[in-house]
Length: 216
Image 1 (tube, rainbow, N blue to C red):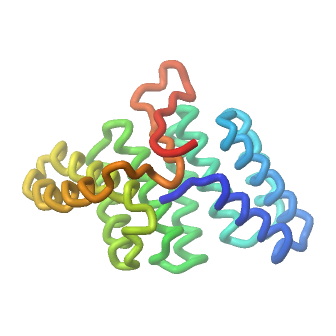
Image 2 (cartoon, rainbow, N blue to C red):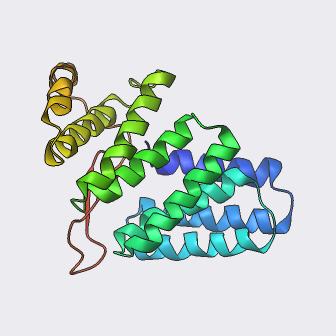
């Protein structure tokens, strides 16, 4: 669920310094790290450009599946924020499939991709399309007992899921989440998300429209 620059940079450095001994993998990690820095400074067009270059290098020769998945994930996010929703969806779906193969069908990294797909649809008011991704992501987080790793972000996902259920004619399922959401919000008074979550704009008239939750 997190998209923090620090975590992404550390991952890229690990690939560069440890496993990434071939030229193409090193360049993939280098451009990915540059994209992470651009994203952290909110230069999103440049972040998209760097992540795109990272994917070019990743496609020239076999690179670790986890690095390819991460590159597609972040490029997909930037494409979504640049209003290129079809590209974003395809990249995120491919990243999800790669991550399921690389880290197993149930992992924190897989849940991140599920929630990102859910947000991509939800923020564009495509609620029916968002519901299955929220359902899978929430179930996976519960199964892995990760709810308290990022409690505020998880509560936000629960609220989005409940809203989407209500919008798609499932008020009973939405109401079943109400008590848990209220209890969690009461416990989280004064807390902020640990990592920046960039929400997608429902309208792309001006391009690169973002709404933020969390800490920059």
